[in-house]
Image (cartoon, rainbow, N blue to C red; front, side, top):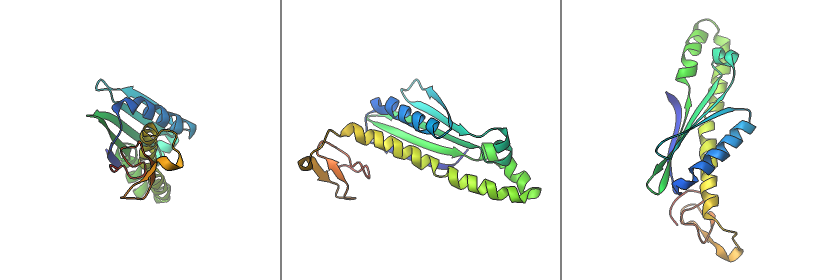
Length: 165
Protein backbone atom coordinates (compact mmCIF):
# COMPACT_ATOMS: atom_id res chain seq x y z
CA UNK A 1 0.00 0.00 0.00
CA UNK A 2 1.38 3.38 -0.94
CA UNK A 3 1.03 6.14 1.59
CA UNK A 4 2.42 8.87 -0.62
CA UNK A 5 1.13 8.65 -4.16
CA UNK A 6 1.30 10.88 -7.22
CA UNK A 7 -0.67 10.36 -10.42
CA UNK A 8 -0.56 12.51 -13.52
CA UNK A 9 -1.22 12.32 -17.23
CA UNK A 10 1.91 13.47 -19.05
CA UNK A 11 1.21 15.15 -22.36
CA UNK A 12 3.87 13.28 -24.29
CA UNK A 13 4.10 10.35 -26.65
CA UNK A 14 4.15 6.87 -25.10
CA UNK A 15 7.31 6.37 -27.19
CA UNK A 16 9.03 8.43 -24.45
CA UNK A 17 8.46 5.74 -21.81
CA UNK A 18 11.89 4.09 -22.40
CA UNK A 19 13.65 7.49 -22.18
CA UNK A 20 11.82 8.36 -18.95
CA UNK A 21 12.65 4.91 -17.54
CA UNK A 22 16.32 5.32 -18.45
CA UNK A 23 16.57 8.77 -16.87
CA UNK A 24 14.78 7.66 -13.67
CA UNK A 25 17.00 4.58 -13.43
CA UNK A 26 20.19 6.60 -13.91
CA UNK A 27 19.18 9.29 -11.39
CA UNK A 28 18.18 6.94 -8.59
CA UNK A 29 21.14 4.59 -9.12
CA UNK A 30 23.44 7.62 -8.90
CA UNK A 31 21.77 8.46 -5.57
CA UNK A 32 22.55 4.96 -4.22
CA UNK A 33 19.20 3.25 -4.79
CA UNK A 34 18.63 -0.25 -6.17
CA UNK A 35 16.45 -0.08 -9.29
CA UNK A 36 14.53 -2.92 -10.95
CA UNK A 37 12.64 -2.38 -14.21
CA UNK A 38 9.83 -4.61 -15.48
CA UNK A 39 8.63 -3.98 -19.02
CA UNK A 40 4.89 -4.53 -19.32
CA UNK A 41 3.09 -6.12 -22.27
CA UNK A 42 1.05 -2.92 -22.63
CA UNK A 43 4.22 -1.02 -23.59
CA UNK A 44 4.54 0.49 -20.15
CA UNK A 45 7.04 0.00 -17.35
CA UNK A 46 7.06 -0.78 -13.64
CA UNK A 47 10.10 0.63 -11.87
CA UNK A 48 10.86 -0.49 -8.30
CA UNK A 49 13.30 1.70 -6.38
CA UNK A 50 14.61 0.59 -2.97
CA UNK A 51 17.32 1.58 -0.53
CA UNK A 52 18.36 0.13 2.78
CA UNK A 53 19.29 -3.27 4.07
CA UNK A 54 17.89 -5.50 6.78
CA UNK A 55 18.87 -3.13 9.61
CA UNK A 56 17.01 -0.22 8.03
CA UNK A 57 14.02 -2.46 7.33
CA UNK A 58 13.83 -3.42 11.02
CA UNK A 59 13.99 0.25 12.01
CA UNK A 60 11.33 1.10 9.45
CA UNK A 61 13.62 3.34 7.46
CA UNK A 62 13.80 1.26 4.26
CA UNK A 63 12.74 3.20 1.18
CA UNK A 64 10.38 1.68 -1.36
CA UNK A 65 9.19 3.65 -4.40
CA UNK A 66 7.22 2.14 -7.25
CA UNK A 67 6.82 4.10 -10.48
CA UNK A 68 4.42 2.92 -13.18
CA UNK A 69 4.42 4.42 -16.67
CA UNK A 70 1.55 3.34 -18.91
CA UNK A 71 0.57 4.42 -22.43
CA UNK A 72 -2.81 6.11 -22.39
CA UNK A 73 -3.86 7.05 -25.91
CA UNK A 74 -1.32 9.60 -27.11
CA UNK A 75 -0.24 10.40 -23.54
CA UNK A 76 1.57 8.72 -20.65
CA UNK A 77 -0.10 7.82 -17.36
CA UNK A 78 2.46 8.39 -14.58
CA UNK A 79 1.93 6.90 -11.14
CA UNK A 80 4.44 6.86 -8.30
CA UNK A 81 3.87 5.68 -4.76
CA UNK A 82 6.08 5.37 -1.71
CA UNK A 83 5.29 2.12 0.08
CA UNK A 84 5.19 2.62 3.81
CA UNK A 85 2.80 -0.03 5.12
CA UNK A 86 4.41 -3.10 3.63
CA UNK A 87 7.84 -2.10 4.87
CA UNK A 88 7.17 -0.07 7.99
CA UNK A 89 3.89 -0.96 9.67
CA UNK A 90 5.23 -3.75 11.86
CA UNK A 91 8.45 -1.94 12.84
CA UNK A 92 6.41 1.15 13.68
CA UNK A 93 4.06 -0.80 15.97
CA UNK A 94 6.99 -2.51 17.71
CA UNK A 95 8.76 0.83 18.08
CA UNK A 96 5.71 2.50 19.61
CA UNK A 97 5.58 -0.01 22.45
CA UNK A 98 9.21 -0.84 23.11
CA UNK A 99 11.58 1.46 21.32
CA UNK A 100 9.72 4.76 21.08
CA UNK A 101 12.94 6.76 20.43
CA UNK A 102 13.34 4.84 17.17
CA UNK A 103 9.97 6.25 16.14
CA UNK A 104 11.63 9.62 15.61
CA UNK A 105 13.98 8.13 12.99
CA UNK A 106 11.03 6.49 11.29
CA UNK A 107 9.17 9.78 11.08
CA UNK A 108 12.23 11.42 9.54
CA UNK A 109 12.50 8.56 7.02
CA UNK A 110 8.83 8.96 6.08
CA UNK A 111 9.28 12.71 5.55
CA UNK A 112 12.24 12.08 3.24
CA UNK A 113 10.40 9.36 1.33
CA UNK A 114 7.38 11.59 0.75
CA UNK A 115 9.50 13.64 -1.64
CA UNK A 116 10.62 10.72 -3.83
CA UNK A 117 7.41 10.48 -5.86
CA UNK A 118 7.55 14.21 -6.60
CA UNK A 119 11.20 13.88 -7.65
CA UNK A 120 10.32 11.02 -10.02
CA UNK A 121 7.47 13.07 -11.52
CA UNK A 122 9.78 16.02 -12.03
CA UNK A 123 12.24 13.83 -13.97
CA UNK A 124 9.46 12.40 -16.16
CA UNK A 125 8.08 15.89 -16.91
CA UNK A 126 11.59 17.06 -17.81
CA UNK A 127 11.98 14.27 -20.39
CA UNK A 128 8.57 15.05 -21.91
CA UNK A 129 9.33 18.77 -22.03
CA UNK A 130 12.74 18.21 -23.64
CA UNK A 131 11.14 16.04 -26.32
CA UNK A 132 8.88 18.92 -27.33
CA UNK A 133 11.65 21.49 -27.62
CA UNK A 134 13.97 22.34 -30.40
CA UNK A 135 16.93 24.67 -30.02
CA UNK A 136 14.99 27.87 -29.31
CA UNK A 137 16.06 31.36 -30.11
CA UNK A 138 14.73 34.42 -28.34
CA UNK A 139 12.05 34.94 -31.03
CA UNK A 140 10.77 31.35 -30.83
CA UNK A 141 9.57 31.50 -27.22
CA UNK A 142 5.95 31.79 -26.16
CA UNK A 143 4.72 32.27 -22.62
CA UNK A 144 2.16 30.16 -20.80
CA UNK A 145 -0.96 32.12 -19.86
CA UNK A 146 -1.42 29.94 -16.77
CA UNK A 147 2.00 30.11 -15.10
CA UNK A 148 4.12 32.47 -17.22
CA UNK A 149 6.81 29.91 -18.13
CA UNK A 150 8.74 30.59 -21.34
CA UNK A 151 8.24 27.73 -23.84
CA UNK A 152 9.53 27.03 -27.34
CA UNK A 153 7.06 27.99 -30.06
CA UNK A 154 6.92 24.33 -31.15
CA UNK A 155 5.68 23.15 -27.72
CA UNK A 156 2.04 22.12 -27.50
CA UNK A 157 2.03 21.98 -23.70
CA UNK A 158 3.70 24.16 -21.07
CA UNK A 159 7.01 22.82 -19.77
CA UNK A 160 6.22 24.35 -16.36
CA UNK A 161 2.65 23.37 -15.61
CA UNK A 162 1.69 20.97 -18.44
CA UNK A 163 -1.36 22.97 -19.54
CA UNK A 164 -2.08 23.26 -23.28
CA UNK A 165 -0.56 26.33 -24.91
